[in-house]
Image (cartoon, rainbow over the protein chains, first blue to last red):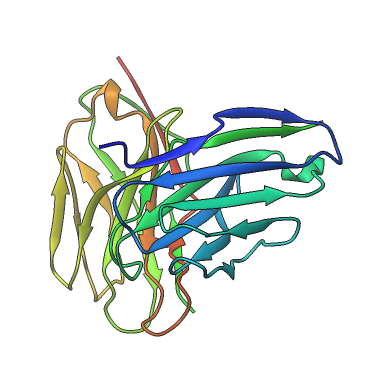
Length: 113
Length: 114
């Protein structure tokens, strides 16, 4: 049982480049989330999805886009990367409303130079 | 809105020492409460939870009691091990009917030395 899988694990981008982070879950969860984790800032929600074909903004959505074309996948896109987007990105999923525990992937460490 | 205030770290202990990490919350009603743990290089994972007042959640020797009088959910362990070195997060679900944002504390880094 793989749980939540994130690819890639590491990436270095130059300012202005674009990339897509992939999150895949095999638990048939309805809800999926993208967080970023920065020192001293804790976890901040970027975007989330409550089901296939739906997405919504979290607390720090600017500079990111997402898509949930299939229930098991949640993609996070950076169209024009900026150094401020250097962070560790975590995907999470849950079965029901968020009082059900979240299951996290192991993260993608992104550096934008 | 909901908020979580968590003891700031870092916390450094010797093996077999007693651990307390404080967590207090502000919320409407009596929500479920969670502690998550993040080991180095990994994502967060649920450590324990309590779903109603006076409940005690426990796992891997850790315990936390849901205290509605003091709106607290402090994490404790009687004898820590080197393998407990990690970042610990207290968390609170959103109010019923609102958005889906789980509220996390800022995290407390625990280092246990042999």
